[in-house]
Amino acid sequence: MKYITLFLTLVFLSGCSGMTELSLDDFLPAIEEFIIEQNSSSIDEEFSYISINFPQNCDWKPLKRVVDGDTIIVDRDLRVRFIGIDTPETKREGYPVQPYGLEASAKMKELLKDTKRVCLIEDSIGDKYDQYSRKLAYVFTEDGVDTNGAMLKSGLARGYFRFPFDRKAEFRSYEREAKDLKVGIWE
Image (cartoon, rainbow, N blue to C red; front, side):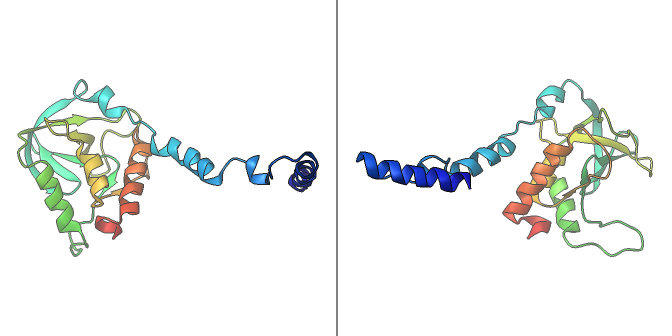
């Protein structure tokens, strides 16, 4: 009702004063500007975890081998599970290889192919080990490649948001980006 009254007042005044014709749109922000303004805050959101933690908080371990897309073995047979991601299964006993499982494993091998040692960073709010006694960590290459994030961005991992962890909002945005681009498991 308020807009109708405003519009009628404008029409009346513009007719009386010889002004150029005005419309209600002249007084309301453009919808496009509003949508862009609302979305830009989430798109431009800066995630500073890496710059704060890499390399100063690294626990460097020699890489022995890649098990699959979200698990590696380091040092003296320590199994490391990547925090916040889940890739399709390839090695689960009694289950067939899941779609995109082999691609996820190949991508992880590609990310770590020339890496002799990896940087493990524990989460400050999450668990240190999972139910299978695997160490939980964010894994970086010597060159600073964020392998957890890279797997999500490639669409070969989905976010594993069941438990609390520092980078949850960041990982949600990476997963959303892969879904929007329809890559990997999101095709």
